[in-house]
Length: 139
Image (cartoon, rainbow, N blue to C red):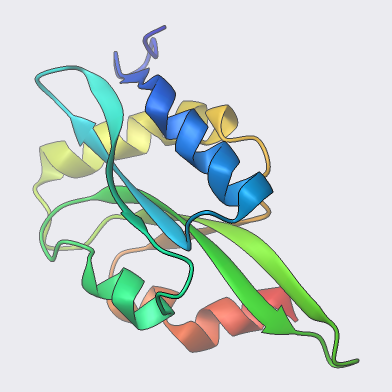
């Protein structure tokens, strides 16, 4: 079903991969891309569980927007291991205006398709989604 605002559909694989990340911890992260010709959001890349946050951020394009999900593991102040699923809307300042508009208009509906997101971030440059920012949002 296409999004009325942007006309973007969500490929079933997007939801399937997200469920695998959430329930089985099969992936560390998922990077989603809007395929304009197909008018849908697709899975562009997945990261294996042992990949780091740096591996994940290195996969994001410099001049194009993406939706991403990252499963962040951390220790609480009480020394209890926990994890949080982040939804990050990557919209670099250097992206084309049309690219930013399409991602912005499709974001809320796409995010609703992924049931289980715990924390959302909007980033326009790498410092806005640095590891210190991520850590600051979970503790």
